Length: 194
Image 1: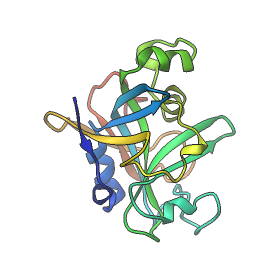
Image 2: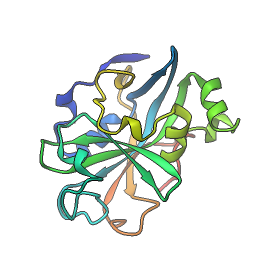
Image 3: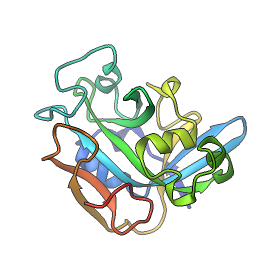
Image 4: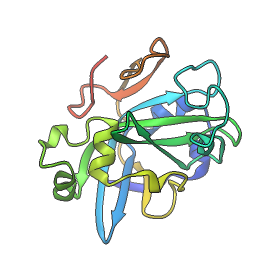
């Protein structure tokens, strides 16, 4: 069910292209010999230009510096003082764009993920960006790490490309008019339909 690790070149493209093509890919996190993984079923693209919702829109800061680095690295930030969120940096160095991983279908290490999330139902285990980070044990210590080596990786999925849909972003105040949220059609683990 898991293909090769996606190389840095995969991420060195426009965020909307990467967001679509990440659907069906597998996020893997290994901690102390326990492997947790999930299939990506929902993403959101954030553009370096003309996108007020993008953290890099106003320029480089200490918080968003990873977004301006090489593609294929994790940009993990704390949201609303409550949740860690995982993004994949896209495009070339200096651009400042990324793809938010919004939802996963749990695959392996489900007992560990449920323990981290307080025993929630399987369908609600990773159906949101904060939920999936909590379930997989992803925190700020992963910020800046490559997603193509080490304990946190994204692998190609196997099988045919999934049928996807696109809609407006959710959970933010600005940039909701941009159609940049991609999700596998009719998948039960998607956070919310269009």
